[in-house]
Structure formats: C-alpha cells, structure tokens
Length: 81
Image (cartoon, rainbow, N blue to C red; front, side, top):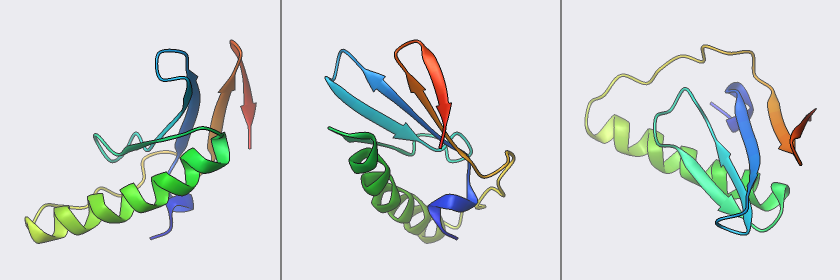
C-alpha cells in the first residue's frame, strides 16, 4: 500500500516549528518536516516502518477507513491537496 491509500493530515506545529503529517488509521504513525512536502516524504518512511513492525508482530493491518486524501490545515484554515 502506498501512503496515498490512506487519509493523511498535515498541520503546522508552532511548538515544533514545522509540519506534522499523520495517518489516523495507523495509530501513532506520524512524521515531522520543515515543509509540508518534507513531512509527507518522511511519513512515507514512517508508514513503511509502521507496517513492517506490525507484520513482524503479527498484528492486523487496518484497512483505510477514510477516503484517501491529503488534508492540510493552514493558518487556522484548511486546504485539500
């Protein structure tokens, strides 16, 4: 499965001074980047590691519950990528 198989949230974190990307269907699967694009690229690696770890532990891989889209919150507003 590609990262685009899952719904992705990207938002700016003032605490971290960068962007956080996460996949709600994969609990705890998130990544950081200075730009939204970097966060998404890092999320692809995090997703692979998440899936590899789940398989190694014999855990069920959840099917996507949400429509596969990238949702990016920008300055209190929102943008769909």
